[in-house]
Length: 411
Image (cartoon, rainbow, N blue to C red):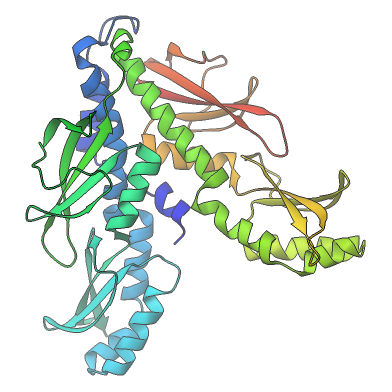
């Protein structure tokens, strides 16, 4: 499963939703958003970022991608038959196929009567999920799998939530992207590292195959001036930053890598463009899009569109790359996007757990719901009986033009 899909399937438990909404409402209930957040600023700021980082971990246990991976393993008849007959060679072969089947299974352990038959994957893995193997309805074995390793989680928390992480097992640090050494970290509080002050929140997560990891998330303390802003707006601004980070993934994150590699490595398209074979170029572009990696790909030569394939629904975050032939000459330009507006709002809403809208002027391109006719770039509104704190930022539509992306946090 792709990185993008993994991020988009991140889910939040009901208890976490209640906690974050309660924290966002501190100092705002029954009052104007202009009321200063004051002493609750750090708590509100941390709660919003911690919520996103924690939701990513929850998604690795309960998300659609995890369920699909478990179903794939449980429905593998060759694996189940091999386990039932103790055919270790076939078990090993099937385990390798499952781990490398593009569903991002990072570790898979197969057992029969508690005895490990095969175990493949990385050494530092969290969020284990168990399942059973059956033949004719009879349980013949079990398995433990995961779609998340420690390094992958740490990178997601940093890129999407803006949170550093320290992962420990039985008090020993096994991974850290902030140099805290072995000093104890509070479950919730503050810590100073090399002169920088961080807000800290911790939670427990499953360790593969058994055991418990302690994950501490560290967020740089916000500037003191933020205390003059209302608590609801503090929370909304943080979630808008998360939505912006998700938008940036469509420009420079892992989802862009396959498209960039295709453009850089393909030899047929530059040859067709150098030979002015527009029909051949168009066919090649259609094949590139069909192979995946592009939501839309447009090729231009001298400002003229030579080929254009892919989705016609609103797209976001277009990128340009030169198309270079074997001699190193630029023979054209690739204009492409990997994300559509609807897919983006699903991704951003799955992370922030609040409504996200994408608009070009007054026209809404995509969103969690239709939204009010007019929205402030920042501030509060009341819509359908709910009061929201609004934060927003600008983006770019395909092939050009400005869009504004709004995050509406219930206040």
